[in-house]
Length: 81
Image (cartoon, rainbow, N blue to C red):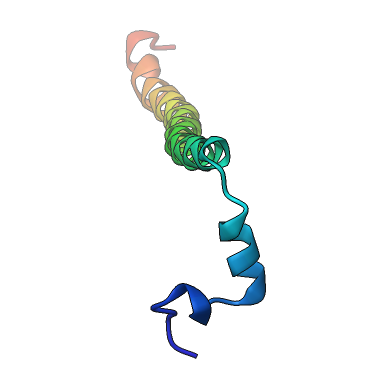
């Protein structure tokens, strides 16, 4: 079935929905769409914040391990037995 080009081509449920729309309900739908977009944007931002924090923790742990290994190589040179 192709896209409807006239009101009469819509399904009965869609016609009933559109016929019952008031200005107030249209404003509510617009607000809901705007809220949905804002929520999607914020959730993307939060996702990347969590990924960044996790990467920072892993990188810090790896750097700490590398520093300990390097210190283990250098420290005996300063404390000969």
